[in-house]
Length: 111
Image (cartoon, helix red, strand yellow):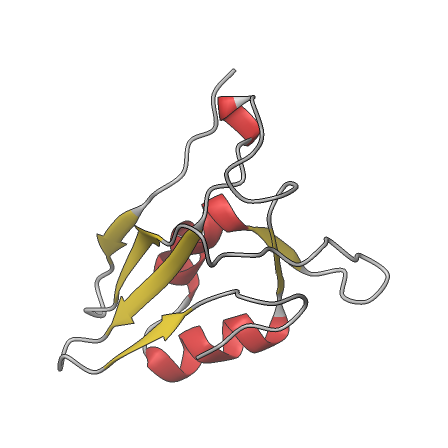
């Protein structure tokens, strides 16, 4: 079976989210349910942001609240359905303000 996930889009509040290729720099944190049971798989981030956030503050809060995880080392898995892609996200509001989320070193992200 294949995984259905959005890689870009916008919602009714004018917030857009784009998953962009980030080769050679991306390093995913390990999934740690005991540390934070609320986790989002990296290929579902745009779906979550667009479905649950109305502005940049809410999007930023989502990244501070949830554990975003990959599935092994980015770009090295052979199975395309569970491939941990080397991604970062660009999130823009209706006024053109934005933020970029990048995972470069475990376990933190950069805004």
